[in-house]
Amino acid sequence: MSLAELIKRAPDADTLALWLEKIPYAVYLGIRAEVRGEDILFILPGDKKLIGNPTLPAIHGGVVGAFMEQAAGLHLVARMTAPALPKIINFSLDYLRPARLRDTYASCSLTRQGRQIANVSINAWQDNSETPVAIARAHFLLPGVD
Image 1 (cartoon, helix red, strand yellow):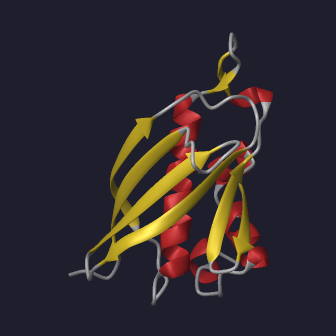
Image 2: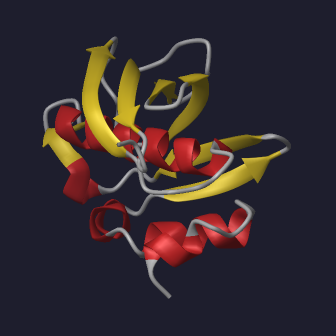
């Protein structure tokens, strides 16, 4: 079953796992997702292959950004009234502190979904959601726009 077919399914834990299996980079990073009530929690496991700064050690900033972008896209698909595959327009990321070599979590908020554009805010943290390692904002072009 293709990702385009899978996104039509309700976003429960099993469906999210199937979505992630269809995205090769998400598989490489080991991204997981859990449904917590009405929210989706995305998890990037701490793995030595993700190290960007071996002195600390810390996860590479590009990996953190890619994880957050993947989370935003999947969160948007899960929240859309008519699920489809949106296209990223831009992604603005603020690194706030090093992402140490341990599990990193991300939660997203659909700030606005219009007819053509959607805006998603992303918060990534490790130990405490009140002290994020990075925050981001993503804009997506919604499909089916003439």
